[in-house]
Image 1 (cartoon, rainbow, N blue to C red):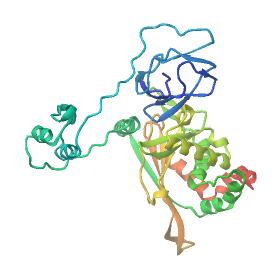
Image 2: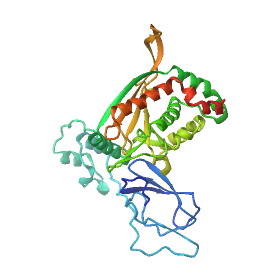
Image 3: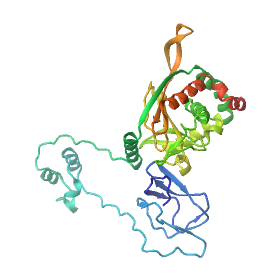
Image 4: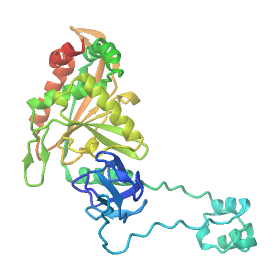
Length: 375
């Protein structure tokens, strides 16, 4: 069972993409694992034949425990104990439609009832007897079970909020130049690469370049000190059915706007399909959470340790603001930087946000090389 993140202790084997005895080539999809962050597609580490499968679909396996071998033709997998048993499905419950409705209304546990009908079928009288009364009970309270991703999101946000000393720096910025830059570069990128850059893509590119001037904001808190990360890997918060995952745009400071848009689209599609790769979720050094598409004006975001900052982005909306000393209408945007006070003080957070505001006001200058490339 591979370790896909530092804090991972187990992984749930969701599916084998190959069956025992199949030939496998290096890089070919081999299995799907659900970690605490996401469902990840694991590629084969080498060529061989899948043999000695010891973990079946649905099994929760400690990191590092052998789940199968890749052997060469004529070789056999080592004999180490007995193979892990396959999960056995529970026999179906035989129950009449009326009894099922009564059980739902009265919150009766069907697994505790022995049916008195033909072949052990549960009938209405069995439900009424178990409920102890023929009077309808109040509708049951619905409880949605958390997935691994949802459970970890809850655990990590609690851990971050209770252990990381957050403080917040807020700025309103005129996004007119950002809108104009997207309108100018977007059609060319769309025509050449088949993807339309979003405001998130532009912000990833700008934030990455501003982080180069502020390495402390791109750092990590290790518990023993501050690690200044040599790479600028910007994470994008992506909403999925199970919660939120953070997908990584690696080396975002060296990546063109077109490539950022292509990577973002691929990451989003894989995240929502539950097919993220290990590299998609590792190594993030700073995160952007954009809720502007949901018409949210402003919000604060919780830091994702060991990162020390996260940027919350609100919607671009027309507002009345002073323009050359007179009231005017401009497309304004609110951005909020959450900071870990163990690494960043107010001055450092404010200095980063000041440069980011300048980049948003004049993105063409900050993205000059990209603008030339995409013309």
